[in-house]
Amino acid sequence: MLPDVDAERLERLMSYLSDDSDNESLRRDAFDLALSCGRRDVADEQLRWASAHHPSSAPWRHRQALLELARGQWAAAEMLLRELIDEGYSAPAVVFNLAVAQFRQDRFDVAVERTHQLLDPAGPLFRDALQLTLGCMHRQHLLDGAIELLDRFESNDPGAGSLGAGSLIALDLGDLGRVERWAGRALAVDPNQHEALVALGSLLVARRQVDGALHCLGLAVQRHPDDGRTLSALGMAQLLTENLGAARDTFLRAAHFMPGHIGTWHGLAWACVLQQDLQDARNAFERALALNRGFGESHGGLAVVEALAGERHAAQMSVERALRLDPLCLSARYAEAVLNGDAGDPERFARLARRVLSARRDVEGRALSDVVLVRESGGSSAQ
Image (cartoon, rainbow, N blue to C red; front, top):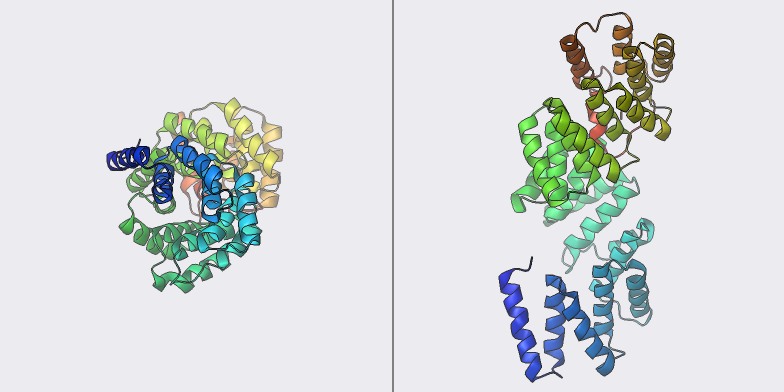
């Protein structure tokens, strides 16, 4: 929805242009305001005028690239921006927007080369460039380097976006002190900063401060309803409050947007286990195993389902595989309890399952539920 003030200003500009149609300055202002308001039709109208009157103008060709970015035409935008740079028009905004186009095409290595050119705290695009650099490094799994980069610029007022991005990277490294500090600083500036809400919400889940987690993650999902990571963390918060139906629905949505995340399938599987829906739980654990057969908790979770279904031999085999991969595998120990008849009545069954999800591990101090909170999961132990 257009803010009233922007809509009124754009309307006034178009009125002026009706009386002064060759005023290039007004045309530029109309394009810029129309693009910021989402009025691509008005922006395109200005570009058609520029194409007829100033076909070789670098500023107008840059604006054409901006419209392609707004349309999601990343390759077309990149081509236009490369041409401008090759011709010597390498203003910081052109370099930055080229990096955005490359980032959107998952070409993080070349994008980060561009953004590094702009990491001058006195430069006009320092904050934006730093945030995009951190985003590239996160996706390249250069987490330690990203932390070092933000540490270097933390005293230069890096902006809420960079602090939020850094807090999410710190979460994936298990650096909870930085998560709390950077997310807190980001949210003090921008209470809706998405990455900071996700990082702080996930931290609160890990601390079992579920009310605060639900608040942060709920806000984040409202603004970005298709973000799988946020949905997965929200699902775990709901699971820990035993809101099983909501948790199951949320994990299903998370899996739709993030099907390659093992922790999401685990969260969905345990929601199904607690609802005693063994078939859907089995399906979810099998999806996790298809992603990585070297993760002990996936075998242990499947062993729980097999034990509850009375498939004793299959369950024992899954337990053995889980414990070979991870001697501390909590779900495998729970499966053994089920096989030994220690799960008891449904209430005890649910209590033991919650213990599996929440119990802290002896080595790394993490719980199985924490698998859901990190961007990547898998391997021989929860990480």
